[in-house]
Structures are given as C-alpha cells and as structure tokens.
Length: 86
Image 1 (tube, rainbow, N blue to C red):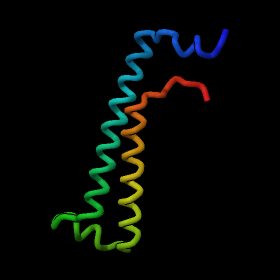
Image 2 (cartoon, rainbow, N blue to C red; image 1 turned 90 degrees about the vertical axis):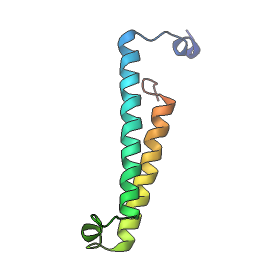
Image 3 (tube, helix red, strand yellow; image 1 turned 60 degrees about the vertical axis):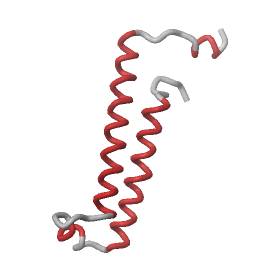
C-alpha cells in the first residue's frame, strides 16, 4: 500500500468532530492572543496603570510574541493537519 492511499482514506464522524473542535479552538485562541497583543501594545486608560509598571521594551516584545503565536494558531486552525503522521 502506498502512502497516498492513506491520505485518501475517509475520516470517521468522530475524527471529523474532533478536527472541527480543534479548528474552532485554534481560531478562538488565535483571536484572543491577537487581542491580548493589542491590549499590551496600546493600553487603555484602565489597563495603563498595570502595564506601565513593567519595562516598555519587554511589554512590546510580549505583544509581538502574542501576535506571532495568535497568527500561528489561526493558520493551524485553517490548515487542519491534526491527524497526519510526521
């Protein structure tokens, strides 16, 4: 059997549901992380007293890491490569 035959194999309903749930959770977590990055990068009047206690360079670095990981989570939810062997 070639590896291509395994790729064309139909997924069960349980696997389809798991893929759907993982995809939705990746979209939600990615959106949350991007919003958290925005809050840290552009603090509002309510969050500024808490955020300004820390080093501004570290806050910006953390915001950039939130953006990168948030976009990665959205990309992973879009690709849906959950049950593939490495």
